[in-house]
Length: 272
Image (cartoon, rainbow, N blue to C red; front, side, top):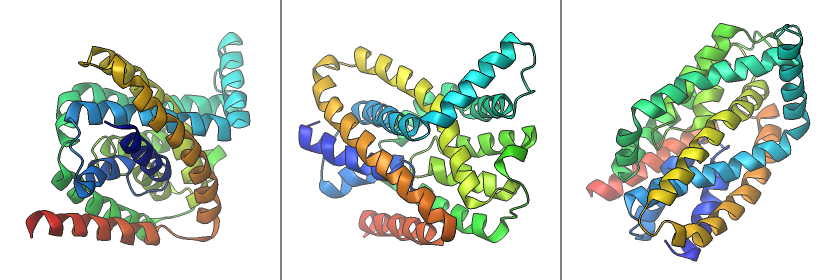
């Protein structure tokens, strides 16, 4: 991977990690359209590491709320009243929502690595994402707010996050969809989606760094990956700000149409 490739893919990752159009799908499809030959294992490790970059964007943007959740969480454990404080309770819900994807990622690691080398697979999953986002708008309820989120609601959103392990299925799109189906409005569903990305991306980043060190010539690729990391972090921060403002007044149908179009266009170029 070259510095230019890392920078371009960093922009793509930062822009699409939080906007519900699947960053992983774009990281698979973009090299295909650009004619770049990147080894599947290297592409997988790069994808994981730039997800950590966008994790840093989440932490910076949501730092006051994350700090409040963390301190309330620890205080609740010390006082043996883990659910007394609403922020501590929200912390436990975020942990619960993380469990399904964590288990699935460990069980399907080899399958996922192979999926990251298939533009065709990513294209089909992009189409699925488009249909999922349209379904979120069709079946949304808006009956609860984030402070009233329950255990089953959090687990439901966590199960939706499992879908996003596959390239082409948007993590933010799937979790926002899960939240909206359970009754959250778009903005609250997006906020919960971004907050629950912290433990998932952190765990994925640790595994990605381990894979990088185990990979042939992995250490020599660190400067290249660092370029992608920094670019993805900056663009990701800007994308979070934009999307939260967008969803206050706009629907997900624009992103649904984009995913359907991108998936279909990719399949046409593959089969024609």
